Length: 127
Image (cartoon, rainbow, N blue to C red; front, top):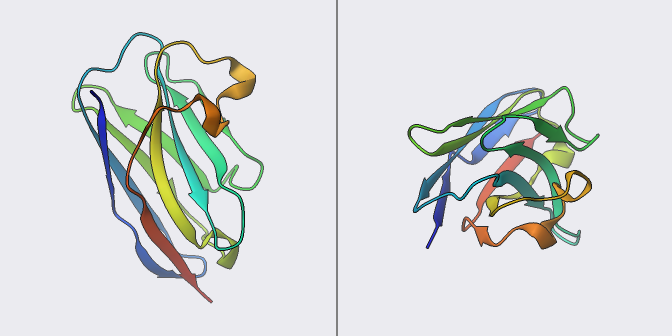
């Protein structure tokens, strides 16, 4: 069974940077996709970044494109999220997640495809 542990959250001033880490234990099956999701108070969960574990192709929501970068270290089974130019709207609970096996391209930011989740970490932007 795959387990995900996310870390690296905290509080940062607007315009600052933060890096989140997601450590994976267990086997990641062929063609899996990993992603980052966030949920702000009173809002629905948003999938905003995903990466194909083998091919490395990335997918981003418009809300973070150009500011956030998702990457991976397959050897050590670690997923990263580099967040730059943070804004107040980025304040949320962030979680990493794994979609096992093939995931349709148009579904790779959809939470319904993801079966394993980290516990979530808080990221707060302080104006």
